[in-house]
Amino acid sequence: MIAYSSDPSLKIIQWPSFRLASKIPLALDMAAQFPGKDSDLWRRICADECVKCVVIECYDF
Image (tube, rainbow, N blue to C red; front, side, top):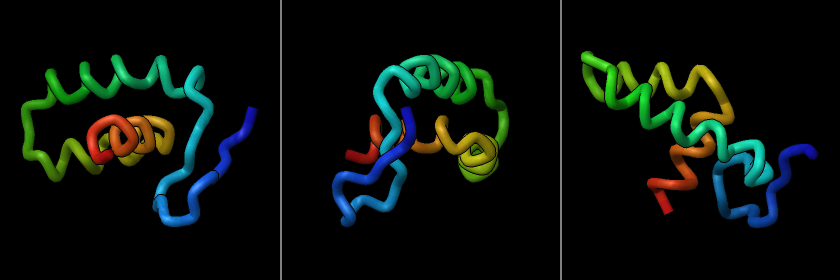
């Protein structure tokens, strides 16, 4: 399956749930073990588009 955007007001790519499901624990582990500043963590999260989207979908909405 591919990404889609069902709501043009959203500023993220919406990936199928099964694709993002494995990224949630990855993002949580990344945040729990990151010793630096929040801005550095966000930069690291944004390096993977799927991880970035799952963080935004889970915590921004």
